[in-house]
Amino acid sequence: MPLRLTPTFRDALATEQAHGDAARPLVGLWVCTGSPLVAEICAGSGVDWVLVDMEHAPNGLESVLAQLQALAAYPVTPVVRVPAADPVLITQVLDLGAQNLLVPMVSTADEARAVVEAVRYPPDGRRGVGGALARSTRWSRVDGYLRDADRHVSVVVQVETAQGVDAAGEIAAVDGVDGVFVGPSDLAASLGRLGQQDHPDVVAAVHRTFDAVRAAGTPVGVNAFDPALADAYVQAGASFVAVGADVVLLARGSERLAARFTPDRPPDA
Image 1 (cartoon, rainbow, N blue to C red):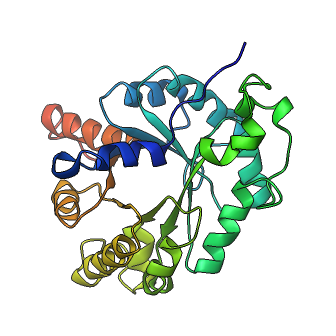
Image 2 (image 1 turned 135 degrees about the vertical axis):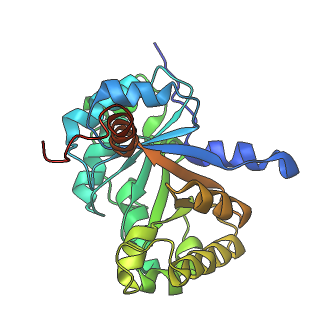
């Protein structure tokens, strides 16, 4: 039975931007627990996209697969952040059925082109061909998947170094890059402001990246768990923004409950 895949993150961004003045940024949540149950809870929250993180979370191929399956039942766009621009791992994650990749630490146009090559089949790239064995094609039930694979996959690259900020316009202009996502945490470290994502130097670098990427005609997004910063970046033209993470929500929420109901308890008790 022929099957259809869901629209990509690229499609979701284009659909929202088609609303013109009524367009709003796509709002997302980070999922770092490795739990399909938590991913499903986040998927039903009303956000537009959910990111499954393999870089800074205990996720392997099996847990990513389980989370993609849990997310598939909801009207939300799943994105998977791979830990590095490794073409072998990228092939494996795509074969799991991930349609939207976020690739960290892209600081030059050449690195961006290498990411795109890892996502595309030959002759335009070097993605391994094993679709008949993989969930990506729903085991050959998606008609013309190999021919239309580029249509079924979107690529967002992450700018999070001073070098990447300087090259942001060139990165955004690479054919096959569907969006640029700014990571203020590593960017702050790169600028000598470790742990100071809200430092004026870091914020200014984020804005410079926004300007360069938007000038290239490419959607730009940012990670901003501070609501005030998120609001400011939306005003600055972010097309998509991550506003929280499952582990952060659980940590801060449990701390607030503990402070409310056990105010006199020593922290190490």
